[in-house]
Image 1 (cartoon, rainbow, N blue to C red):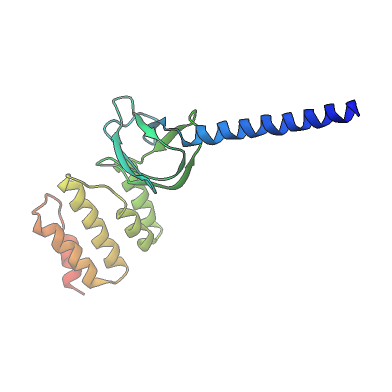
Image 2: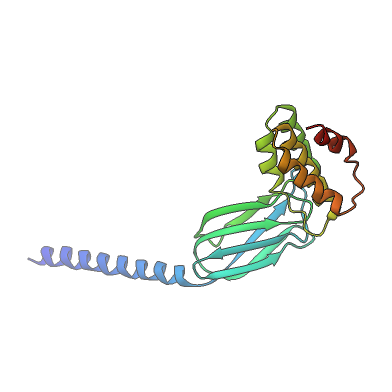
Length: 195
C-alpha cells in the first residue's frame, strides 16, 4: 500500500510540476519583448534609414534601420506579423505571416538596389517576359526620386508597347512627358505614333 501511495504522489507531483511549467510558458508568451533585425543589400552591405513596418491583430508600428542596418522593435508581443521594408531606390520587400515566437531570433531582410533591379528588368525584357517585367517595375519604391519614378514609367511604357497595349504605353509615356524629365523618350514616342 505504501508503494502505491508513493507512485500516486510522484504522479501528482509530476502533473503539478508540468502544470506550473506550462503556466510559466503561457505567461512568457504574453510578455512583451524586443525584436532585433538587420537590413542588407544584395552585396550583404548594411542599408541605413530603411523603414521597417509591421502589422498584426494588435496594431502597427514603424522603425528605421541605423547606419549599421540594424533595427529594433520594442514591446513586441509573440504572434504572427506582416512586415514591409522600404527604402527609396530599393525594391519594396513584403514578408507576410511571419511567426515571431523566439526572443533570441534576429530578422534579416535583404533589399535589391536599383542597379540590380534594372539589370533584372533588362533580363526579363531580353527574354520577352514583358508582363513579368511590368509587375516587377511596380514593386520599386520611387518615393521622392522623380528621375527613378520617370525611368520606371518609361520602362513600363516600353513593356506595354512590346505587349501591343498601345493605350497603356501612351499613358505611361504621357506621365513621363508631364514631368519634363531628362530621359530621351523620342524613339518610343515615334514608335507609338506609328501604331
